Length: 140
Image 1 (cartoon, rainbow, N blue to C red):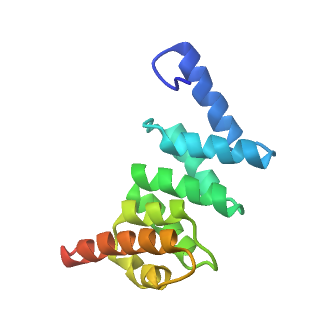
Image 2 (spheres, rainbow, N blue to C red; image 1 turned 90 degrees about the vertical axis):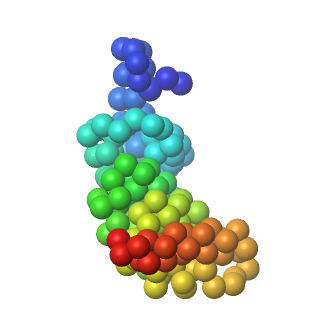
């Protein structure tokens, strides 16, 4: 589905942005995922991702965080900090932490990088931790 480059694609993008606020969870989830994974970086896309990143739904929120962190690390950072301090974690939230690559995330990432019953999450958290530690060593 094209999202840029023609009037048809522009209409698709507007529809996708609208679906990030759809009452149906599946629609919000897929729309946010697709928007976050797109290469499009406009004020409208950032605003839609920011709104979704403030959602009560962890999956939608964290997918939006990943997309937002790819586009604007400073804007995403406080939201990523909040997500890492929650009672559970998702892969997209850890991806967002890696994109932010900020030393302020180190302490929270250490908690998630501890061995658990989910080796994949442990590895993603360790990867994000490594990136943030490197950023800290560079003085970022």
